[in-house]
Image (cartoon, rainbow, N blue to C red; front, top):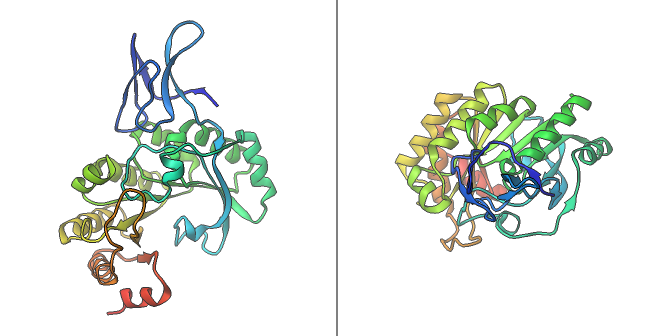
Amino acid sequence: MKKEAMFYEAFEDHVICRLCPHECNIKEGNRGMCRVRGALRDEKGMLRLYTFNYAEVSSLAVDPVEKKPLGRFCPGTLILSAGSYGCNMKCLFCQNYHIAHEDPETLFITPQDMLEKVRQHRESIGLAFTYNEPTVWYEYVLDTAQLIKSEMPEKKIVLVTNGYINPEPLKKLLPYIDAMNIDLKGGDEFYRSICSGKMKEVMDSIRLADEMGVHVEVSTLIVGERNSDEKTLTEIGEFIKSVNPDITLHISRYFQCYRMSDPTTDIETMKKTYHTLKKMLRDVRPGNVTSEEFRRITEN
């Protein structure tokens, strides 16, 4: 569904999207980097920015909250989880590329309809926006979160995100969010060369969410030696510690996916990463590993 977007500036022959740090300059008929926000003229001939994935749902399932991953937020519970399509990063290792960078089939589910689905799934603690990047689904996420919180304030709203969003829209959304898992993918060079983003802006989102009282956990996919060097791990660990030493950091093992052909991250690299980060952080949790591999990684 096409809906006028929030957070943009319109000019005679282009618009500038202010939702995320890319701040795409979009000419009439074109779309931004996320593929879901584009410039068109309205019935009066005014150039406007529209979002094209409003209420378009590509994925809907009930998941354990630990799968988000959230390790210290309502453990042992289930949560209804929804995703759309599009993303404002271009990670070469994207694990959900079929909805982030392709055009999947979708169901049209309005915020009111999604509220009813939350009601129907009584075993669920609320709703998680996940699978693709939820910040490029901004208007729908905001409308739906506001509606659920007004009708069922006891229900939890979760965001699983790359954190690549400007402060103004994030501040508007955070009062309706109970918990977030935010990716902190690596150092700035890793972001630029592998993900088409910047590290600082993600760090700013993590700090802002924590300051506004949201339960925050962080995830880092360990891609071999690309982001497990001492400098990168120290930067990640010391930053998280400076924000809140109680933040849980999930370190996930990379497997070949999408456009990244690097070999699977070996267990010794995961072990080194774990023990380096444990010197700085209270709660580091390996993921994407078997129980035996978990034991090997975490043993002294």
